[in-house]
Amino acid sequence: MYRNSGIEIDVDGSWQSDGRVGYGLVIRRDGQELYREGGPVPADDPDLRAHRQIGGEIYAVVQAIRWCVRHKVKACTIYHDYEGLARWARGEWKPRTPLTKRYVDFLQRAPIHITWVKVPAHTGQYWNEIADRLANSL
Image (cartoon, rainbow, N blue to C red; front, side, top):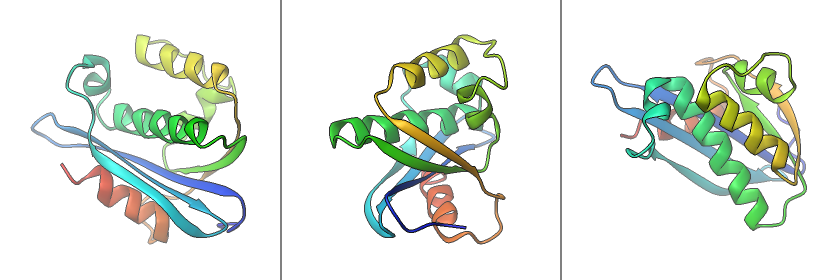
């Protein structure tokens, strides 16, 4: 499934029953890990928390794209297990909440071409499992 070429990113989000929301991402170039990040989403954004794990998924994508922009990456492949990330990005789903509208607006303004690849959750996909662990490291 992984191409192991170019910039590839796995993202994930999590929600705990006590209300904590987390995110995780792993960035690779040509199959070699470059960067990883994860933990709780910012406490000052109630929209992220209100969307539970979807807020974490969205935040992971935003943080990954910010990393790409800082490092002058022009194209990447994002592997995700929540289909809404790609469906909003491709215009297949209409964003209906303030958070999803901000997400779509952010992606439309980002100077990067994104290829979206859906992966099955919790099936042992190596990089997705790392992103999942980072998202749950609250």
